Length: 135
Image 1: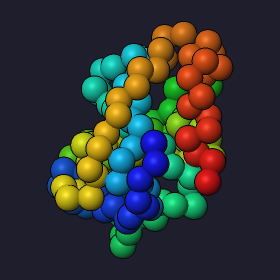
Image 2: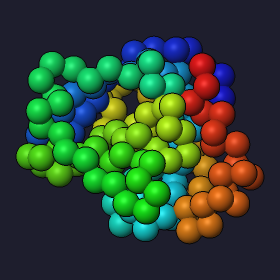
Image 3: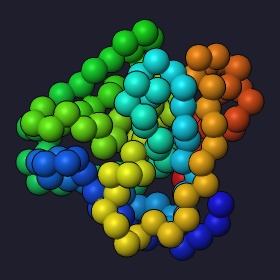
Image 4: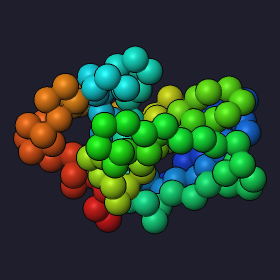
């Protein structure tokens, strides 16, 4: 999806965790049915890690959950519990941004694609998701 690159800001519900990310105005977001994403209702887009910046003292309000292969690092706010971003197994060199946690006004188009997290390896090979964290 080609569109203008802009700086998006966002974060968690209580605003203790804030970040900035450079990404297009139109993004491909992934709806995943893995055990974690399906319980959280998470739909996210992926950016290269060097386009993501955690702001201010946000780090002190984060905690991490990891399971299975322990490659993914699910970050969530210690205060409100929201996962506004995480480091995905599919793209360990990238950051997954929960698109509903982006402040209003900068995302103009979201194309949602399905990722079969229950059949992770097959979906990873078939979807091209790994290319999402490449600059």
